[in-house]
View 1 (cartoon, one colour):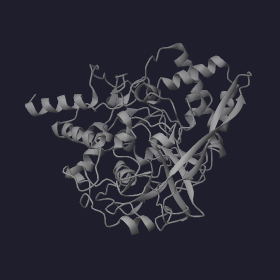
View 2 (spheres, one colour):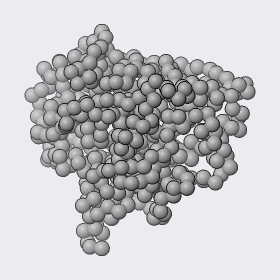
View 3 (cartoon, rainbow, N blue to C red):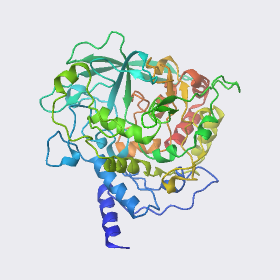
View 4 (cartoon, rainbow, N blue to C red):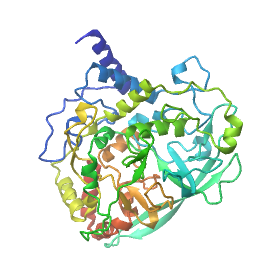
Length: 465
C-alpha cells in the first residue's frame, strides 16, 4: 500500500468515525441478508449509512473522500477566502448537504419552527399548469421551493407553522391507535402572498445508502413492473414517471425523489445544490431567483460561474453513489421470519419489490449486484390521506414513488428518531403502514385484521431491514 492510499484511508476513517467492521462475505443469493449485494455493510452503529463501497481504486477512494468533504462541510456566502466553497444563497434552506442528511441519514420534522426553523423539511411550490417540458411551473415570486433561510442582508422568503391533529382508530381486535395529521400555514412571507393557485408539497430529506445501486437498475427491469391498468387484478397499478432530463434535453424515466421526479443522481444532486443552498453548477448555471427576489438580489456577489466546479460536484455524486447499504440483522429470529411471510401474504410486496439485479453503470462495483431494496421505483396512488394534491410531471396529486425500505430499521440508530413518510408525520413504522391508502388499502385492511402478535412480527421484520 502506497503512502497516498494510506493517508486516504486514514482520512476516510476520520470523516466517518470508522470502527472495526468485518469485511463483507460473498453476496448471499439464498436470502436477502446482504441487502446491497457486495455493497452491504455490517456496521450497526451510528455511521452505518456512511460506509464506502469496497473495491474502489485509488481514484475512487480520492473521489469518495473529496465528495464526503463537500457533502458535509458548510458553504459560505461570497466573496470568501475559501473560494471553492463560497456562493451560498442568497436564498437557501441549508448550508450543507449534511445539514439535512445528517450522517447520510434521514431528517425529522421540526418540533419548534420558531426556534429551530424547518430543518430537513422543505416545501415544493408550483401553480396550475405545466411548462413546455411538462415540469411544474414555479410560483412567480417564490419559485419552486420556499427558502426559509438567507444570507446576511437578504430576507428569507418565509416560514411555515405546523400543527397536528390526532386521529383515533382501532384494530379489529379492539386495540386502539392514533395517527397525527399535519396542517401547514405559510407565515412571514417576505414578498407578498403566494400565487392564488399555488400548490405545495412537504418533503423530508431521506436517508442516502444504496442510491448508486438504484441508479444501476435497468429501465427494462423497472418498467417490467408497470401495471397501469391493473391487468392482474391485485389492486395495484404502478406507473412510471416521465421527467425532463436537463442534460439530454429530452424525456427520461424518473426514479429519484419522493415523486420520482428526477432521472438520475447527477440532476438530483445539482438540483439540490441550487434549490437547497443556492449553489449554481454547470447543469443549473443561473441563481435560484425569480420575480421580486431576482429584482432585489440578482446583482449580489457570486462564488463564480458555476459556484461548484464539475470535478467537485462529480465527487459528491460519486460519494452518494458508492454508499453501502446496511445488512439485515437477526434473520433467523422466528418473529422476523414470520413477519417476512406476513409482508408477502398481505401483499406489501406488490409495491415494495424485494429483489433486483443491477445492470450497466459507469462505476464497476455497482454492476451485476443482486440487491434487496424493497421498492419498485414506480408511482402509486396512496389515497386521499397522503395526497399533496400537487402534480409533478406525470405524477398526480395522490401518487408517490415507492420509497426503498432497506436501512429503515437503522434510522433510529443513526438519526435518533423514527419519523417516516414524505413529511415525517408517522412517528414509527406502524403509523406509516396505517397511513397507506389507495392502492395499498387492501393491504392496510389486512394489517388491521392481524392479531397483535402478527402485527408485532411484521413491524419487527421491517425494523430488521
